[in-house]
Length: 473
Image (cartoon, rainbow, N blue to C red):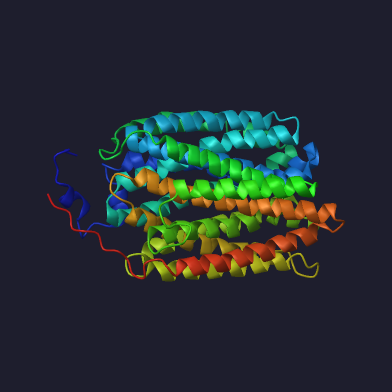
């Protein structure tokens, strides 16, 4: 394809399907590369959720159960901010190489961990690398595709979870049962370097933004402040000494909130209409969904006595329906209001959360959890993809990296707080003499309430799709 071919002719062929535009010769390698980028973290993330009860049984440290997720997500924040700004300044290739290297190192550390603390630290390294990889992916979507193709490309990225979703949880359970949980991590080590070799040429073709400025040290320090503040808050909630707990929790909240003011777009904490409301909604959305998702295997394995394979099937159901919801978004996005799509998705998530909570009752069949979490996954695909689209539509030109990094930051921070608070609640319930099931029930009630907050912030999203300005030669 000639580089001098007019963009208007290439991107506005009205009789060509969106799918053909995504896979045309100009975008084919980039599309394939982005799918490969997602596969490694996708498989690993689903696998950890499935086998973590087995890891805790082997290494001990139930009190660190939530930290296995929170440590990953908090360091992901640093990766997102660093990679987003660097991709704006110098292009996505170098951040991608660094992200893959860190992720592989984290896999090796996890596979050789001798204690739960070491395992949590390995998850932190993995999270840093995964944050860089995720930020690079969304920068490429924002900068490498025309407006009318972006909804379909977002759906394709979600589809990259299909294969890991189909075989990941169940395969992780089988590997853990047959040869040990360590090989779930070590077996992934050769995959990502191969993906790097395949995708790097496509990433080098994406030039850095011409409007990006110098390195923003204040933004990086604010990201560090968010991580430190969140960690202090979660740690303070687990300290038995009341004075120390109060100091850590309040100090963490102050540091975290002040840092968020510096790092998120203006108006995000107030959920102002437009991109700020979309980012705030993303935070509550992720907090609710992943707060329920993290402890569903614990419910099925520890409370209901099921195998890791059954727990994997429940997570697979949500992964598959998440993909279906993303493709449904791509179909409805051209004609339906963003606010409506997100609200419907959130209601489905709330329904699914209520369903998995009901499985704590002994008389409720376990299959209810699988069906309910599938419903929640459908809602997540619909809502998450639509919110992502709103952020891409409203991002200033040349600042797609910073905008999507802020969106991913809200998502990861929400996930970290949802899983972290859930872990704190369960640990507190066990320490107080209550059952693990009582703690999980309290977590489910909390995340359902958070879904209600997400519905409130979603009312500030655009009511109708934004129409892109016509391209000129």
